[in-house]
Image (cartoon, rainbow, N blue to C red; front, side, top):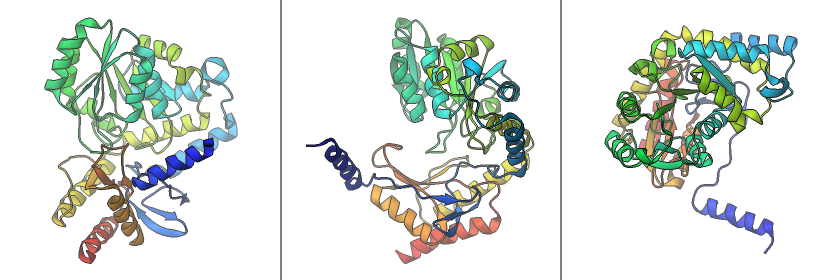
Length: 387
């Protein structure tokens, strides 16, 4: 049997399980209204929470940088790839989360994989939430540290694992998302931070989906809850509307990551125009209190009215609303029906979520207008009527 035959078999297995993905192509800028295959639809599944992805000030910063600094950084950061734009953005984001230093990465995935692998290794232990993002899971695996997975948001289980396994480890680190991207629920950060201190364990918090939305000036859930983790990871492709990520920590920690994170050391630096765009976005995020209020109000309205229509939407206080369906093909059929009605809500299936919990992941933007929210609700209501 030839290699390509094995490939075709694997694809057939995915399709039979309702797990074969075929991404839709968006034309034009990301925003509340997008164009898919020539059709104008409302977008309710983007991470562009504050609606900044097409903001003129951010585009202008990128354009100005491209004209004066070029497009590519042309090398890794430890060769000639560190440019003024990178260091200025790092200083700005460190100040934003009130950390001593920060380091830019090309993606949130590379930030998590590289940071964990740089900070712990064989003989160490990591304690990871069961529903952490794939990049955190992969970072734990690549570190070759001993991995202990605690039940989702279960502080008592985490404490029991710490009592059992912390004494055998040289170094140890607790790793958690602050806002879980597929469930829209918040980690009990204060309790976890207390355990990290009690057991002499480092704490890494991925603030990917909470930065820009929660906390004073959008500084995230750690700031909102008065928690100071050892390492904060923040992504720039969500509320900031750009691309890339940063890791913020004490200077010695950042220095170690800079020297040991393989995804940093062996990657070409992000384009300087992306760093300039991120800095411009940061200025907007700091002043976006009205947008944050609007975003969460949209989410609360959708959550309440979808439940009234009979949809299974769990409790939550964030901008992320999972509409639980369960079966893979059924989830994608509902996504297609919504798209036919002019509303794009992508279905999320395993392995992104656990088996049997396929869902529609609904995320409003601050820039959605009230009539957009009503049109989305009307689309869901029409599906209920038709069935």
